[in-house]
Image 1 (cartoon, rainbow over the protein chains, first blue to last red):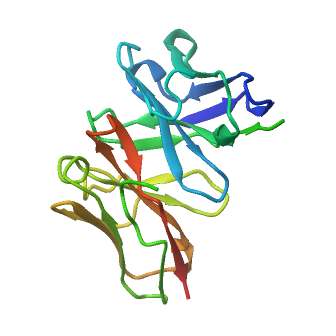
Image 2 (tube, each protein chain N blue to C red; image 1 turned 120 degrees about the vertical axis):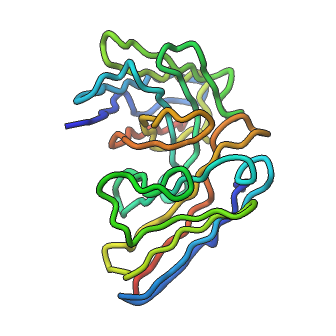
Length: 121
Length: 110
């Protein structure tokens, strides 16, 4: 079964850090572009980051650029999101998402179940 | 406030046809293809339509997408109670150099 499973969510204080992980199974992560998308519970979806299969191309949303770092370890079939300088507004469910791989086309065909990040003092 | 505008809500009765609109600009819908997602309550989103009008394997042909100029639409025919969900459009935006989602439309089956 093709699956993405996120982990690493939890609580952090403003200014703190968390590292999210995403384990892929049922397919070879290394051939796919991947993204992280977040959603405040009860609100809409927000794309945060994109990483190409080779890690050569990385994009970030303005809201997280300079604070979040996306990376991957294709040998471990894993994707990561290092979140630093966390803010209250980073509180959300974070989804690891597989990309269809068509340039400039956000076709996200496989989603993880999401991991909740809560930033609060 | 998203750069893509969707109506916050839509409704229909079983068997009806409903459409959900997504309005953008030349830097997004006007230049790139549109995708649609369905999010059932308490679950992760699911890709419903990609590249304006293509259905992934397993998506019923009751769901269809179209695009014209800087707007796109999702149509659902033969409405069923299981279609009650939030629907989001998504497209690449050249000005933002990244994907953007619409604000979402909550579909209620009366």
